[in-house]
Image (cartoon, rainbow, N blue to C red):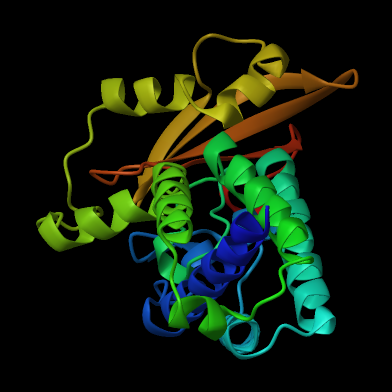
Length: 273
């Protein structure tokens, strides 16, 4: 049991330091939540569907994680362990909320590498990290002390846990993809047939969320602006006639779909969106 607890200290320190470096080094594109592949989302749609991330906040979180990781290595004080547990519990809550309320947004757990939408693996990973933090509360040694006399059992447990968390981390695939991925053609000039747009739209969570409100199989209007193709449908919500506008990315990869519901009598749908 003591061996397992000591291993959790090493694991949590490594994760916190890795998260710190990722947040400080791997940056998201400027105004990432208001842009897709470098093209601005219409301002109204951005307000409805995106929350702007602050670079200052990201750096601050990264530095805080770095301080906690270093503290786990150099001291076994209970206050450090409690702060780590609270931090991971809060992160678990945030990731869970993102999965429910913002399924299109990444968690930012490892900076710009965590841009993919939050999935079950990310939530499970956060829960397991919180469990590891709870287990570390009773560890008698600081991380450096564990490293000075690494036992075989510690090495085995650490290797197994690292492999488990690696399997739960989509960031590794993103990192590998960044290294080998060729540059995509500019999305505003990329050919995007309507069949591709409708296929992307109909398998999206935005479509599933509004499908029952759509009253016509044929769209009212379709137009393209930059890296987005907008598809407007007649709909009915709470006994009111509305127009449901979907914005479908025309990028080569990771095509996003966003949506907005506007009053049917609105003069200009693009302005309302």
